[in-house]
Image 1: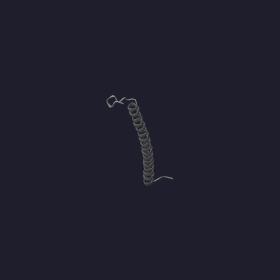
Image 2 (image 1 turned 90 degrees about the vertical axis):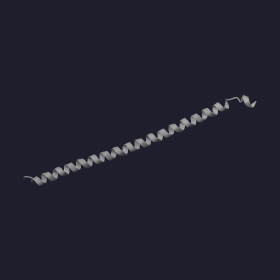
Image 3 (image 1 turned 135 degrees about the vertical axis):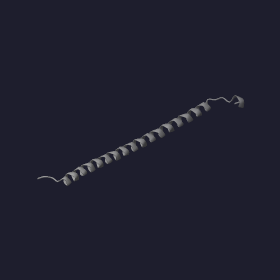
Image 4 (image 1 turned 120 degrees about the horizontal axis):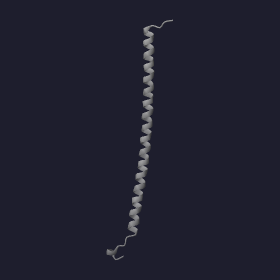
Length: 74
């Protein structure tokens, strides 16, 4: 049985459509993965900044506790 040129064209179009749909799905998955990675990095960055800020405040407190106030006569 021979296939008409119309059937061949329709098969080719279907194959291209399937490929395009696969590429779109892969791009969406990649975007979702990158979005999740950015969110995870943002959380880690905030956690790190909070830890640095807390350490800075502890150091300031410790340095104030260790100071002598000669001018105040204490």
